[in-house]
Length: 207
Image (cartoon, rainbow, N blue to C red):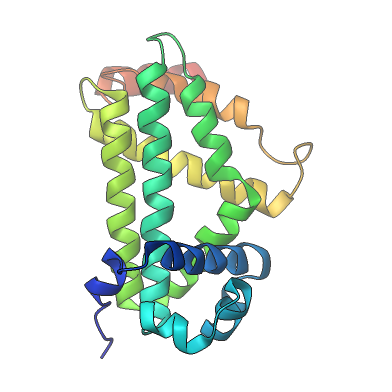
């Protein structure tokens, strides 16, 4: 039976600067070397601290992974909130910036590593679900209007798909273009886009 992730480890400690340094080191290890190399020993070495010091803040690898997931989701949520606060109604520049952030190679390596880890660890899977819902809420608010939550889910799924496609190709020339994906998503971002009438119209246009 999987041990539940310690909420104390997730919420912080009396030394947030050290805690943040550990989380950042873990993110760097995961982005550069993959989930297989994400060990407490590797993270402690990257952070420049003793392993016993690391386990003071994060008793287990799961605690550390949960903190990484939460921080990543919070960063993307902040990006959406800040960009949409400055956007005009006719501009989807904020969405293109989000797409670039999600499709970035380092972010996708982190994302894929977390998905793999979540497949066999229910605690990590729960943290991933929590982070996904956090992102959905941010996008729902950004899109606004009718069926915003459903549209937010479609947009997020499309951006993850874009990231995976580009991660496999590893080349702007071979992979799907971010700008093209954003243009394709533009109609879905409009209120009412998931209505039967709008879906039918898009099908006819594509046929």
